[in-house]
Image (cartoon, rainbow, N blue to C red):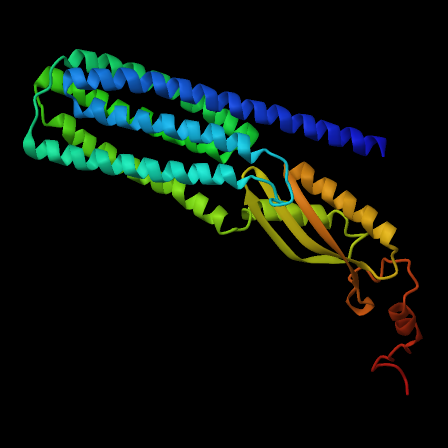
Length: 336
């Protein structure tokens, strides 16, 4: 009992530490996005560069998304209550879904405005300012993306991983735009700025779909990945001498939490206390393999004729007695 309580305290402490890491990362993303949006917007207005203005619009959306993430992360880790018995994990999923929509809108705007400027034509000024700002943006976004990716993986936060992906797209898109401004500055190709922005718009739309699809799966309660289901099966198989099998395995995600339930079958002569102790051991093994798993196990007796452990079981069940009473069939080579 003492060891179980201590392990529960350790898990609770670990959850608190993870939540603090998520919130700290979300705060840093808000501050960084605000800084980048201000300098990009100001420089974009001065230079008239569509590349910088589109990047500034993207950074403004970054602010909204990072604010949404911060709110969602705080809500997602509230404990379960009477109206939300499975917890509030899908706040994080909703934040990621909102990110995908806003990123898609951003990509559509960049694409539309870039095509418009290609047709109308525009003259850029103070290009060297834009080059400096984009170079700074590439560096800062790269550092932030790596940090968010690391924290997102450590804490298994889909919202932070989505934020990381978004800032990674900023790195690539701003790098392309930087090359474009360098070419405009050296070769005088004014059309190259909006032309490259078209490619950025398409890339951003693709990234939006990459965020949207996993969210849709989670909203529709798609099962856990095959490799995690295999881990569950392996954990149960480790107790093969104590259980006769399992069925009705179901799983889904809710934010960072994995919800797993299945039926675990036992010899019908085992007591409830014995079966429950075995189920606790199975649950502990699964939680070690799949962190932050919420597991529900239904205990179910097995009919003796179906028991795969019958030859190894020491219980004197009726099926064994029946088989022992059956006469051994004689071989066809035995004398009459």
